[in-house]
Amino acid sequence: MVCTGNLYRSPLAAGLLRQRLADPGRVPIGVTSAGTAADPGTPVPPAVTAILQSRGGDLAEPVARRLTTELVERADLVLGAAVEHREAAVRLAPARALCRAFTLREFALLLREEDAAGIADPAARLGALVRAAAARRGSVRVAGADEDVADPIGSDGSVLRACAARIEESVERIARAVLSGAGDGDRRLSGHSQSG
Image (cartoon, rainbow, N blue to C red; front, side, top):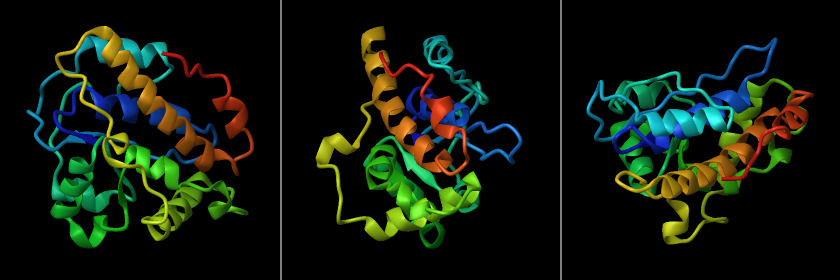
């Protein structure tokens, strides 16, 4: 997950997706976050931690870190909060990221659960979903600013909660697609509130 400062959007998205993809008895899918202009070591604001906890997520990385070529090259999927973050990942590692970097909302809209039909393992399902989404890119697209999750930095709590709700909507769709072949994924996801 990538945003600018790695303090609001990407930690929210990573914390929520990490929790939603937790699948007991299976090898976990690693979910991390970074920022294109992060000041490494800057603590994630308490308001972000509070929102994550209220939505069932966790903060595995309590301080910001900068997006690097190595992080992009190791990732099977890079999700940016906005188009600028997706583009930054592609610039860092074009050969690796071109077919693996999306905005969060773009990837959620490109997903089709049937693209991973017959695949039970969540990690293998994710790989199939990423390949199919990359192939589908251009045929389905969110227009302009609708593709981005706006940065809530400097805003009040209601803006941060709206940002979290926008992120959670995409996270829920992604997690459902990844876990739908894992048996209990839909049941587990249905217990999480999607209200802001």
